[in-house]
Length: 246
Image: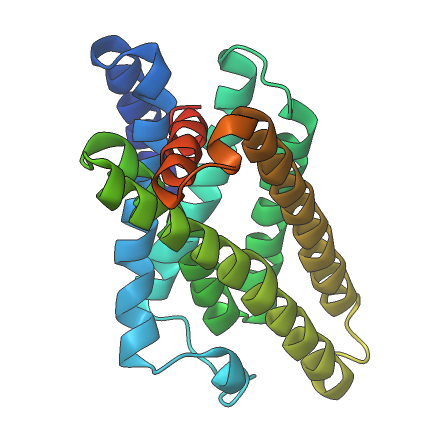
């Protein structure tokens, strides 16, 4: 696992450098996020489908769940992605939500490390799925889509997936982890720490949701908001494009 983690960290740093050198600054960070989240999805989907993992069946095989090669690479990649993400935070121009992003990365990395220790392999796969799928869509929107209709559809899809993955499914996973901790983790403090980390990450995501809402309401002019459906869609797309390129 350690050689794969180290190699992955170097590759991710190289991807960021190449993107910064050949892609406009406006899109370089979005390209990096799209590539890394796409790789996360590619690593998470095989074990999810092969083991039929969902929120209701996360704990069916616990504590006898074995760490497969695919899951091991997934956890290594995610830990490396968080480490590199923290390094890039200090290397890139300081962003407004620097502290929140740093807290998110540290809590996520700690969660994966504790997950490896306690055997939360199935939970880890679902976390990657729910935190990566809409980020890939955001990259597709930025790079490939043209036309108001396609962009409006992607904007709506992103919003639905954000609410479902980052809030509805996340809260269900917190509840599932809490019930499992009552059954399995009475004498293991790491269960409580994992639960706290999941709650902290949900608070971070709630703050980002509120920021997105405020950003959209500021960016869409009143003339667009009270105009036709097409005007509202165009105003929303302009706001969403600002989010996608940030």
